[in-house]
Length: 115
Length: 110
View 1 (cartoon, each protein chain N blue to C red):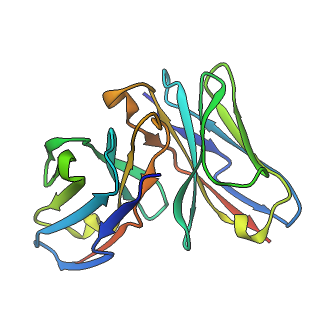
View 2 (cartoon, one colour; view 1 turned 180 degrees about the vertical axis):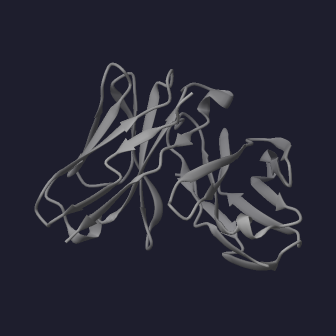
């Protein structure tokens, strides 16, 4: 079974631009979560989508948004990019539900550089 | 929300040594996972262990849920074990929201 895939793997943008990252979960997984990793703040939760609805949200400004499609694929968008948005963005998927269905599996990440 | 504290922050070993990494949680969790982050940034699943003990080769993990901590044991360490180890958990209805510790940077010298 294929793992979680993320595209693109690397991205360079300039301040003020916007960016869209894509995540395809493991087949059959219905929950997709997004995380931001920076050297200063570590790994931080952005949001989680389940059945096309945002179920949980972290403490990020409204410039960060996401959505989930009916096939469980997810996208996240960052508008008006700032230098501090440079980070590794990780996507994870799970079957969703209680117990071991909760276990999250991560993709390889998208490394975003904002100049 | 849940706070996660990992220790030690850094660990340097000689090949063949054993080590124990610890993770403390501020509240009860219903999902607890250990990861190894490879040099390219991908998080590799090691254990899903909200309670009890599991073993996988040279690695094992124990979670004492009532005392809100988890331990990751690495025996007979190899240079390929080097990297960053994270624990993460979620509680209540926050199924898709993992809170991560700051990680333990493990360096194994030949």
